[in-house]
Length: 259
Image (cartoon, rainbow, N blue to C red):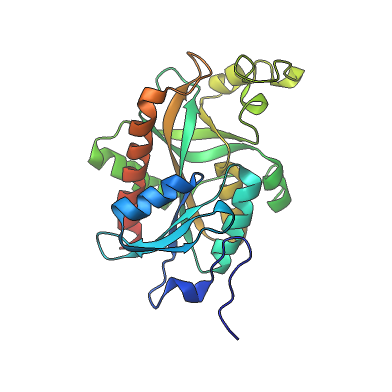
């Protein structure tokens, strides 16, 4: 049989070379995946850009092979990509994302490392029951926190609210085309704040549940680009700093885990 290329990601195990990576950095934004590959990896090459799901294989500075891949936005897209990455041999995934803080002490430019997720995602319910824990791998999570400390990056470790929608699901109404939130969503951010949830994002809950069910290690680090105690908008002047911080933390942790 020839090389089997998975339908959505556009590559298979044989495309990963003779020393295939087992660790992937997974970004929602294809440009972030490209930047990681072209700026931070040695000998990076494009595996596929099928459906805009850019994937690159390369080598970390310590010589370990690694994949920089794109999940797309939201849990349904991520679930497809992660399923196929697992079939291609990936056994550790670090999600690198962006996030909105819901705590006053979690400031734009810093990063949030998710220890677990309050998982409010339909895709996750197809993987495991609602009550199934959405927990990050403790060893990858510690590696991320240690990397942030070593790099001097302001960071926070805690629980993330992982939801399906950017506007309604995160209680955005002033910046949304739909100001008419469902009753159960009105006040949800304050409720989560009181539960010591740190932030909103849209993928890690499903990723963590898939990791538990499939049997791989998963973690998540997100750059804080919005401060929801102050407003609904992205703080554009802090976005590049936040994303760069998240990338640097993930790369350092990846070297510790893939070396």
